[in-house]
Amino acid sequence: MGGNQSPEGKLCVGVQLLAFDGEIILSLCLSDTSPDEGLIEDLTVEDKAVEQLAEGLLSHYLPDLQRSKQALQELTQNQVVLLDTLEQEISKFKECHSMLDINALFTEAKHYHAKLVNIRKEMLMLHEKTSKLKKRALKLQQKRQKEELEREQQREKEFEREKQLTAKPAKRA
Image 1: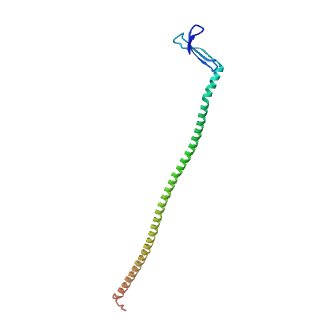
Image 2 (image 1 turned 135 degrees about the vertical axis):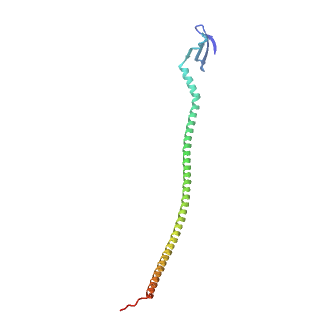
């Protein structure tokens, strides 16, 4: 970088980019004609220089970028495997949770089955008691009917006896 006179006689501050062989690749010149402008007046770039710069830039950054790309691909694959594993674990957890629900249902079913067995025993016991009570009631009813029949017969005998004891007027003829 340095200051020198341009062909028009103006002061030029510029930058030159040199290749390894000393050839000028890029030359920039800023003139001091107007403090407001600050324009680049002289910019010469050769195609060979651009190609060499691009190759150098690519050779410098391309291996790192390729390694980064490969690392990102591996990370993506690992994430896919991790997501699949996570989904499998979630499904196993849901199965375990549903197994707990099923176990709770079976426990509840056993509880209600025991209640039903107890109710059935009570109903059989009540059925036996009602059968015995019905038999007893039938026997009592038969006994009452027999007693009433005997009383009725006793009343009829007494009525007949009174009838016979009652004085009868003699028949005159």
